[in-house]
Image (cartoon, rainbow, N blue to C red; front, side, top):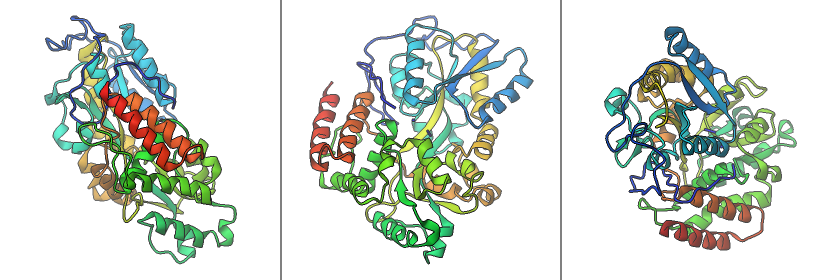
Length: 432
């Protein structure tokens, strides 16, 4: 869910469920702690830590407290890392490079699994200890490296379109837009209403950070293009990719996207929508529960992302939990990971924080769908989501995307030049 200037490591290897063969530039593990050539040993019981982003919802501590009440001799301490996703990754890598046991269980963005596994910073896990067959397949694939399990899905994520139902209804619009052209036209109608005075049409995440990589990839995919193919070969200098980038660039130029949105990350967009500044917002499902407690409560709904000629494609997001190769008390850690990623815990995260569950059954539960009507939309978004660029050097690729997309959005380059330069950058990254 939720996402900033990437510290790129030489020879880092990050991808989402692409199944590529990655080569680590060296091992940070040792035979006694990582032991991946012989298979890790899950022994030792006692206190452990859980390292994750700072949690504003309070639900993570709630789940940890539930564990601690039942396991007073194996308590979990919540180590809250910065909200900035790149700072989280940097601190986890620093912890691994020093072979510190300060972090036991790690909450990792789905694009980190392969990098951490390739460097032997996390342990290979016994797949039979977790109910993977009950989870949505795309979420399980994010937790694998070279076909083996190195993490467990805790929450998935798919981008969705939030929209003001009250304003669309008053403007005589009966359904959410399915294309960019429809969204622009709907926005023009809504902005004629007195109630919509001063409102902007649409925003996503356009600051130069990982969120821009996501929004760029979604625009390209939603126009029928690709950033890379399944083997990591870049193919972004194409007419289809240009149509996607042109939509974003043109929307900034004509005011569909407000100029201040160039600084938006997830939270800035959420706050703008909740405060009544936006008619449409691209964001993650976590926004739903927070928006229901704001001034737009009962006045919004969720729909699939629009695209060029029909519904668009989301980038696949989410978080998996992994076990540090350098941790102590790994038997306790494995049990906690099973507890933390259980269907019961996933239901709690859904109800208290709108986190997308990895379990398919929760999307099909009639009572939950009645309470959270966005679930069918979210399930469709996740099942149809496209992994972020399938490249070995993901950090380099993401930085290049951010650099070139931002240059196009701010007018420093044309869309055509930005895509040409990006193609060259991605080819160099892929050749490393």
